[in-house]
Image (tube, rainbow, N blue to C red; front, side, top):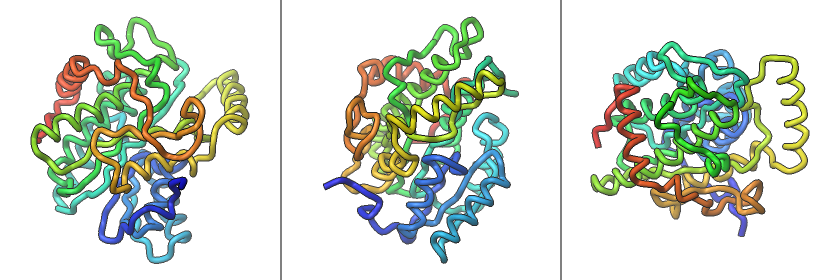
Length: 304
């Protein structure tokens, strides 16, 4: 029997924080979780868009509790400010859905922290956010890291993580999504070693029709339009792409360390099922090295 949003267990009394939920699979996941009764926190760089999305979810699900807050995962100051304010409120988080991301930035950009922009937005900001929010996670919380089938050809450039020497829009993106999967698996190992009941689960949407690509020039916009057309032919909708994330976040059988994706050909589209983890994503030595490097770059250590 295919897994659909109708199979999401009741989420009343649970709180879900979703990064990057102003469009695409993040929005669809937040919408479905609200429909199941969860309290939703939309954390996004553009507060205006976040507030508009919160209003749209309330219209779709009258009575839903939806909050919107500014959070730019590309800026450590924003991540620290968000986490500090949240911890001060003392409200637990039951689902931490790490979804915010950008892709295909045509030319290398560097954030105020000196990080390559895709790496900062997609991975380092989420690593820091999770560690800083750790005291706020409930005992049965789930941390869901959004990875990608792009991890298969990704490599972590340990000798040049910020890609100052050689930058490519796609290779930079693949590195970030591999990092997210490595992070999710390593977090699961550390949680198990600590005897924690928190689950770390990873998911990917296959190829879904979203606006993740960031293109600024005319040629880039043309490429984006062509890409959108191809997505319509071989991929799936954002709502379908969100199903693996929702399964990872709510299904009772989704244990820590699981990687969920579509079950179709090459995992491009289909129903949620265990996804393929390439050997280099499960490399424990590389995971330990990336974790140590991430702590050093962000200044965030986990109190497991």
